[in-house]
Image 1 (tube, rainbow, N blue to C red):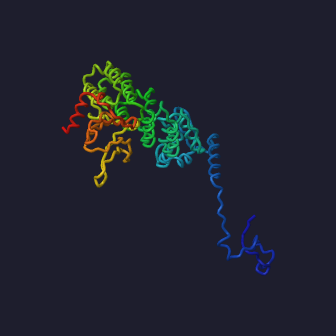
Image 2 (image 1 turned 120 degrees about the vertical axis):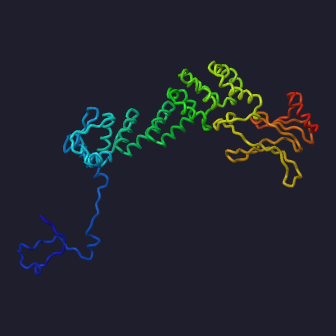
Image 3 (image 1 turned 90 degrees about the horizontal axis):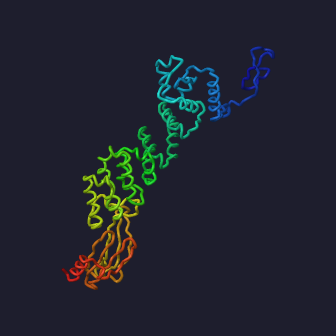
Length: 410
């Protein structure tokens, strides 16, 4: 039966009632309204494409209309060239550029696992796939080979969500091998933030020398104390001592030995047999000893605290005067060059004199001399943020001599 849309014909217009050339119209339409009412844009949405894919997947299971068989590790996967080409530029190039595979019924693909191919085809025909810790690596490599960016990115995101102290180094190496810069950066940040735990796992012992140096040289390494870094380095060296012994000096160069506790340094570091038999390390040990004696008087890249310790080198300003120069101020402030912030420290009580001497002793500050109460010595304790008046009897001989000379204007 044929339906024609248009106006109804009158008997006069139709000629004879039973003329076979005349076809009856269904209903009348005003020609003026045709432009706006004779078109309906209908869409079934994504359900249409999903339904077609579902049917194609059923065809694949029944080997209906399949025109190519993919062979992986001896296992055969009947497929449709059109579906594979629509989803993957790899297969589009294979089947559409007059390659040998475009004419053959059986195509063998090497370098991937049959299980990975099965999961990949499930994604191609359904748009869904189950990613697990067991198949993510092989599924990633398969999607990379067949140039399926969405599946490849999903695998990378899955790996990022699985980061743990026991696997972050292995995932970083995998990310570097496949040029996944975002994932590699995320792994590195995670390892830096959890270094104490990461260093306890087997993956840490398999690091290459340059990879280990990259971590232990970083100011962003998150540790509670520098002893963790030293112990991690020595554990790495002792794991393969015959091959790694020559690297000891270069590795200790990145360990901030001066910041180790003096007792730990003497008992553990200097007492280590491997270090005792490494004369090339003596200069680093000597630097640490000097720092333990001289404090901040001795500076080197290894005396700079890591950010995670909460310590940083600051500029301390002691005293000062009003802009007009008429009144001396007792304020003590510090400036942090890293954050660019000023911070007020404890005031030196009743210390409004001028022409006094200031010196640093490790992390503390000594203030002595001046025109008023010239024999007083104050020590600012940076750990307690507290000024303390030191009795002369408690001063070391050398410091006492310095104070007396300063008091006498020498």
